[in-house]
Image 1 (tube, rainbow, N blue to C red):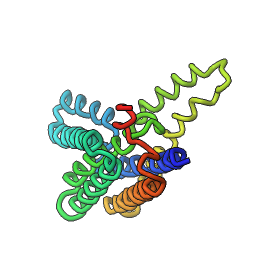
Image 2 (tube, one colour; image 1 turned 30 degrees about the vertical axis):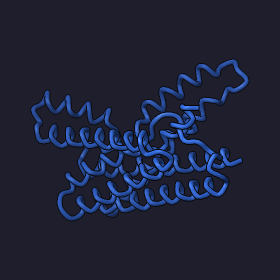
Image 3 (tube, rainbow, N blue to C red; image 1 turned 180 degrees about the vertical axis):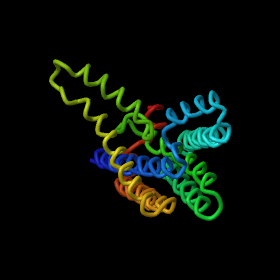
Image 4 (cartoon, rainbow, N blue to C red; image 1 turned 180 degrees about the horizontal axis):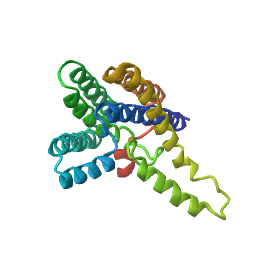
Length: 232
């Protein structure tokens, strides 16, 4: 029962974080005029095109976004690996702190610098559910989500589970819905729309704390983290 409750929390947190990722990516896309804080495939193409066309200012900004995203992913991965049972909470604390810091920087000092900090938060988001296999793959790269869903669709043909691919595909429309809302929010509030992302990040942390408290009440061994499962 406790394990099932934990999986439900994981899925709900994934929904919130996917929506959040789409939201901040769309806001960044408009604020930065075509660059991203979560979509590093797109940024990689922009880097290549910027070099070819000699647009060095754009190259510098997008390279900064990629480096920040990578750094955030490294930080999130390190917390997940060495944070122990508290790692899922600690990753979300890091996401919250980094996203809030990026929002403040964007609104008070430099919009571009703030978005680079937000990119670090986006990188860390991908480690928020690394302790569980309930939600497959990362949370900010929907290209991989679509490819995995397509492969599962092919694999499910002629089986008794023809809709199994939807267990992965659902992540894509959630991300897109977040991007739609992020686009509308940016049109009305500009970079200040990032505060909506901060609220969502706080909500995801509260959900994780509630899950952790519920698990503790059920007993210390009710649900093992990823490291313990691997050791077992």
